[in-house]
Structure formats: C-alpha cells, structure tokens
Amino acid sequence: MNPQPEWLQTRSTADDRGASYLSIQDVNKTYRTRNGDVHAVEHADFDIDEGDFVSLVGPSGCGKSTLMSMIGGLETPTGGRILVGGAPITAPRRDFGYVFQDPTLLPWKSVLDNVLFPIRTQKRVVADYLAEAERLLRLTGLWDFRDKRPAELSGGMRQRVAICRGLINDPRLLMMDEPFSALDAITRDDMNLALAKLWDEVHKTAIFITHSIREAVFLSDRVLVMTARPSRIVADIRIPFARPRIDTMQDEALFSEICAYIRDEIHQAHDKHVSR
Ligand SMILES: Nc1ncnc2c1ncn2[C@@H]1O[C@H](COP(=O)(O)OP(=O)(O)OP(=O)(O)O)[C@@H](O)[C@H]1O
Image (cartoon, rainbow, N blue to C red; front, top):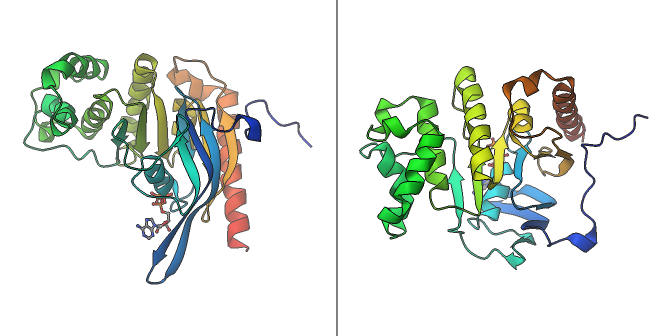
C-alpha cells in the first residue's frame, strides 16, 4: 500500500476541538418536506483556522450550500453545533460576507455604489468606507470603472464587484458559493488569478464552494472533499503550495497528483453511493 501523502490531513483530535476560529461539530441537517425527509448533511465535523482559505468540493446536491447556510446562521442544524470563536451561532452573522453565483448587483447603481451598498443598508457612515472601497476596486482592477453601471461590465467584472461588496465591511469570514461557475473557462481562469492575488492582500478566512477541482486546489490552503448525500467529508487536504499562487503552479506534477486524488475520492464515494 502507498504511504499516505503528507498533504492529506487526518482529522483533529478531540482535545483541540473548538480552539480554531470556526468549529463544525458533528453537524446534521434534515429538511422535512412533503415528500419525506431529506438528509442534506450528516456528521459534518471539521475546524477552520483563522486566515485559511478553505474550499468545499463535492457532487451536486451533496449539501455544500446547506452547510454554508448553517455556518452563516441562515439555517439551523438539526444536530450538532457550530462555534465561531468558541460561541455557538444562533442568528445570521453580520460580520460574515457572502458572494453567490449570481452577482445580484443593483442595475441602477454605479460600481462604487454597489460596493458600498451593505454599508448603506447597515446604516453605517459611507464616508468611513470610501478609502476601503477604493482599495478593493484598485486591487481588482475596477477603479477606472467605478462610475459604470453593471450592464456596462463583463460577467467577470460583475463578479469582481460582488467580491468587493462582500469584503467592504471587513468581514471575519467571506463565504463564496460557486462564484465563478456561470463564467466562461477563460474568464474563470482570469478570475482565479485575480482572487488569488486579492487574497495575498486581504488575508481573510474564506469558505469557497466549487465544482472545479483545479480551481479549489489553485486557490485554497485546504480542500475538503464531500461525498454525495447524505454527505460526509472523505478527505481533508492541506495544499502544499506557497503563496503567491502563480499560474504555472497548475503545470506541476504535484498539482495534478492532488487533483487526481480528489477526483478519485469523489468517484469512489459516488460508486459506493450508487451501489448501496
Ligand atoms: N430548503 C430546502 N428544503 C428541502 N430540501 C432542500 C432545501 N435546500 C436544499 N435542499 C436539499 O438538500 C440537498 C442539498 O442541497 P444543497 O443545495 O445544500 O447542495 P449543494 O451541494 O450545494 O448542491 P449544488 O452543488 O448543486 O449547488 C439537496 O438534495 C437539496 O434538494
């Protein structure tokens, strides 16, 4: 048998649970529907350290978004608990930022006003956030487009605006749910590079949901691989590449080895699932 690769992590021991920034402890979620119970998440159990960029990859419908909604306090677990800084999550978190597949920008507002929108809705002083909006728009190459309306931007630019909006109030955690899946392949590669570069500057804790294994490995410090429903985490991988991440990292044998390992884990779990 091959020795276990160094980048494959074993799960935390019981002693250090809860010491991390975010601790997901034996979390379950069952939706009660008219057609019966849907076990969306079963026994999700992992910790996330502050500053880590963590991707969740797994087949469609395996409960990634449900898990993210519970971490954001938008859904309540039916079992287990989620701790942030040692305290249980009991309500939607205003100190977390969100980016979704659809950028959902306000079409009548400029790029700058879209980025500042959460500040206005939270009734904070907009002037206090102008410098941060400028910094984020410059980092994402959008400063020269600050007065444009969303309809005047490309899909990738709109999603960059959504990321700036998610970061404007300096969130403790940014959650991104398939933010690039609606983009074409070339734009998506550009977005991956842009996001990696942005992360070198903002150093935030992030949870990133994607179906793209390469995207997850390229962007993340850690990749958690989920199986089909009822979903479990079958692999926890610490990505052994230094930052800044550069495009040519994807040509390295180790990069392909890790991607192949993740793909195998997903396929094996799928085969077990369908043969049950
Ligand atoms: N509000 C809900 N009520 C009932 N069932 C739900 C609800 N939300 C999600 N589900 C079900 O829970 C399961 C997990 O859904 P979820 O959206 O979390 O998966 P996902 O991994 O994010 O999927 P995808 O990758 O396709 O976005 C699915 O079977 C889905 O139909």
